Length: 140
Image (cartoon, rainbow, N blue to C red):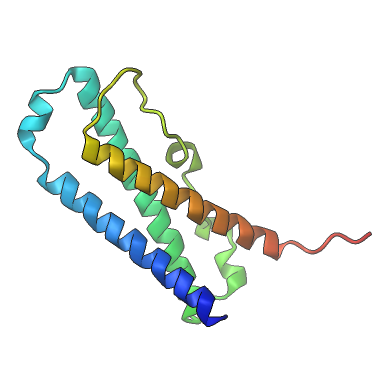
């Protein structure tokens, strides 16, 4: 594995870890009065979207931890390609529209959702590349 590949992986891992910490900080310390001022539909959408944020970050971190294990020699690349170690949760994590139309989410939550979605898409491309590299070449 090249130094460039390891540097890319390390920076992606650090980005995911930092985003996870930011999300935890936001979800733990957001203003409780914020919810009181929201409509029931907005509160429901906020709850759904915070769960989506958590799901994305959990899926991303799980996939990156598997890759870290591969890089450390703790598991093989073939083992990492097993379905249980692949990036999952696509139905929830790839969706970008709130479950209720016309809702207003807090700007900070919107920012975290956007960043987590972009990171999830990037990791999904890496996962797909890993899958393609495991297929035998087509013979003509």
